[in-house]
Structure formats: structure tokens, C-alpha cells
Image 1: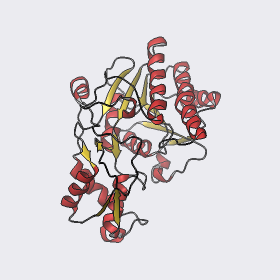
Image 2: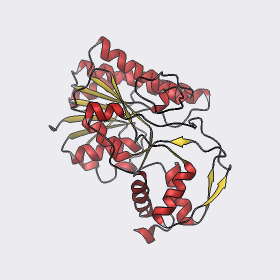
Image 3: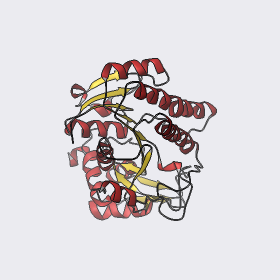
Image 4: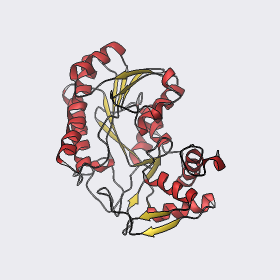
Amino acid sequence: MEDRRVLVTGASGFLGANLVRKLIALGHSVTAAVRPTSNLWRLAGVLSSVRLVQVDLLEAENVRRIVQETQPEAIVHLAGSRGHPQTLQQRLDALQTSVIGTAAVLEAADCCDVRRFVHVGSSLEYRRQNRPLCETDPLEPDTYRGLSRLMASQLVQHEAAVRGINAVIVRPFSVYGPWEAPHRFIPTLIRAALAGDELPLTAHPAQHDWIHVEDVAELIALLLHAEVEPGEVFNAGTGVQWDNLAVVRLFERGSGLRVRIRAGAHPPSPADRPCWVADMTRCRERLGWQPRWRLGDGLRHALQWWGARCDFPCGAVLA
């Protein structure tokens, strides 16, 4: 893989910060684009190895200026709204970030002849199915987050078809690993295990295809140079789904810790599905790629990583 100048939007986020580390390790020259209000805690230790730029993606002229100044050969577009919007203002913000922000980055990429544009969408773009989801399945999201991400992905495919932008789309499933937000399921599970607290679970277990963030970063890095069709889509999953209780039991077996569960104490998420798993055939056949991390190994690694954080209970024990 040749070294490239890569601009990463949303670089201060969970996946963004892990991707930045992966690209640095591969020898790429990285420009990390973040919002002016971003908390940079996830980029601790690598800020001296990147060019950091602050930009609001809704300001199209500033986006174009930064792309012209940094001259990236590739752009990885990760910036997007977080969580599931509940209020009108949150929904409007999600649409602006996903659609207008993506349009601004695409426009800049086209004007500056960027060689590869990797857009990171979401598995929530798909319609619910009772089988593994493949990239050609219908796109009928039933969450507002999925809808906003789909609109951005369709914009990318439109620009790939009409303007010839060399774009590819990645749809991650349930990503976990280092630098994940502490309130998410696996960090919460680890915190409950270390502190002896109860872990609230939903009454009706939902399925998730858990993929380690290092695997997703590796796939994105591969797509910087892989031969793909303009606008082509690739799932980022493992092909195996787990309900939350099964994840808890797997964690217990691997760690020797016990977790007290309170079933029905956690409200369901809008994204909960009775079946939610990736069909990874296209990645295997087109790219020769498959994830390296098994969930049991990933949970043990997460326990070590979170246990070493000073703001986590019993961190000194596992440091």
C-alpha cells in the first residue's frame, strides 16, 4: 500500500480516532478534521503526528479551502450526527450534518481531484430482514438516524454516478473497542462487572453483529486503494449476531467475573432488531477481507483497556 495524504472528517469520534491511529501506523500523512467544539480526548498521544484542522462542515467555503490547502489524495468522511434524535431541533441538526455536510465535503473533493472518497454510512440504512443483510438489499430505514445516513449515502452515490467521484461506501454494524463512549453497552457491561453493580438489560433481547473497531479501521484503510466500482457499498460486520445476554455470558466466561443482571430495566433502543447481522460475502469475494477479531477476544481486550483507565472502577487492579 502506497503512503497517501488522507483527510479524515469526524476524526475526534470513536471510529475516527481509531482510524487516525491505523493510518499513522501504516505511514500515511493524516489531516484530522474536527469541529471547533470537539473534545480531543480520543486523540491523546497522536496529535503531534497529525495535522489538526477545525472546520464546521456546514460552511462549504471553509471546507473547500481546507481541502485545497491540505491537498489530500483520499478523504474518509466519518462526520455525522450522534445517537437517535428525539426533538425537532435534533432531527434538523442530523439532517444538516448528514446531508449538507456531506455535500460540502463531496464538492471539495470534486474540485480538488481527490483520488478516493470513502464514506462511512450505517447498517441502519437497511430495511429490517429476518436474514443476514447484503449490500443489494432494500434501503428502508425505520429510524431517523438511519434515514439521515441513507440520504448522505445516496448523495455520495449520486455524485459518483454523475460527476465520476471515485467513492466507496462502508456500512458498519455494531462497532466496539478502545475509545468507545463510556455509556455504550460494552463499556457499561465492564463497569458493572468491575464495580459489582447491576447491569440493566432490555426486556426483549435485540441482536447485534459486534465488530471490533480495529477491524473497521483496517477495512477502511484497505478501501483507500482497492479496485472498486464508483459508489460501491461494503458491509462492515462479522456475519455473527449476539443478543445482549449472550454477550454478558461470553464476557463472564472469558473474564471470570460475574455480572448481576436486571432484565427489563433498560428501555429499548430505536435501533433494536430481532435479527441484525451482516452478509459479508462481498467483502470476502471482492476484497479478500474478513474481520480478525472474535468477540470473546475483543471483550477481553476491552476489559484490559477500560480497566486501565483511571476513571473506571478498579482500574488499578487491571492496569
